[in-house]
Length: 310
Ligand SMILES: Nc1ncnc2c1ncn2[C@@H]1O[C@H](COP(=O)(O)OP(=O)(O)OP(=O)(O)O)[C@@H](O)[C@H]1O
Image (cartoon, rainbow, N blue to C red; front, top):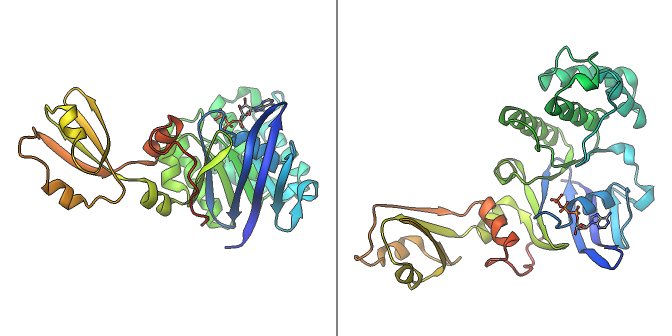
């Protein structure tokens, strides 16, 4: 698929602190690309540099063939991390105002506004004042505002925060539909389960540097090692001495044994000593959530690893 956005080796300083240390990734037409990382990692700063809210001290942001201040921002949609809409304005007027900022025709905008309000469960709220909306409803209106002009690239900074599970599901499906229709989507989120379900590729950042970059499948194959969970009373020291073990976590009678990447699971299971107390046993791959926690807490993935550039 065609490359829509290219972030190339960007660096950003705030006073004497370098918060982005050479960030590079691409976003393609029709894909959902996640930008992930712990609090303060540099996600929003990266997004603000893409949006031209600030400019990088080094490196380039390219949208199609346009660079820096030449980027046609009306082709980009943006849901910022900070939410906020004018209070004393009617929902439809807010949405038409967003469309006008992007030079999008009013009649088309009105039709899209009505369609999306209905899709997101806000039918009949067209002429309600923004101050009458709940927080989640306001967020839905702001989301519609970010896509009203049919952007080629959509940047969503924490779109799911503050939404109930049903609304999260609706948002998730709408975002997937937009990608299916060709929109390039860059999404920042802390909800790893949703990211795992909906994103094609991901870029993980820690302390302003890349730690993982690749397709969801590649990341799982490369980083989602197996773990074996055993319920039973077992000595930590015995489990830690088993082959191919990277670490063991124990609480009460549950032990989680994390295995090395190259382990052959059936062989590993066969060599478990008969003396182990096994009331229940399961083998799974670690989730994206666990990969994330490992990175954020500097466990075995702590050092910056150069992932693939899929
Ligand atoms: N305007 C600013 N002036 C000074 N430092 C800043 C500014 N904005 C961000 N920072 C710093 O830059 C670093 C990256 O912040 P950023 O907001 O990009 O993180 P983030 O990954 O989006 O975090 P979160 O998940 O908490 O939203 C942090 O150390 C933050 O304190």
